[in-house]
Image (cartoon, rainbow, N blue to C red; front, side, top):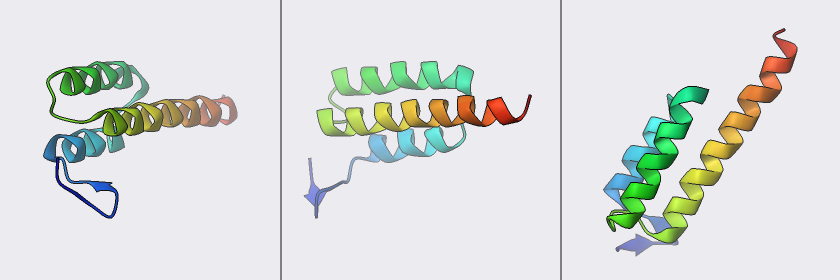
Length: 71
């Protein structure tokens, strides 16, 4: 994979990262599966997979945290 200054240049990584910006909690589980499949297919590397999964996890935690104040 081509890299510049430690940043991934994977098209699939960018695609998944953009999906993450517009996902709700239910869709997050599907996105994690898509990330895992992309890794298994060699479309993203292990670091990209971990980055996406951690970002998804953080996003869901933020949703849960914000939900406390919206009740």
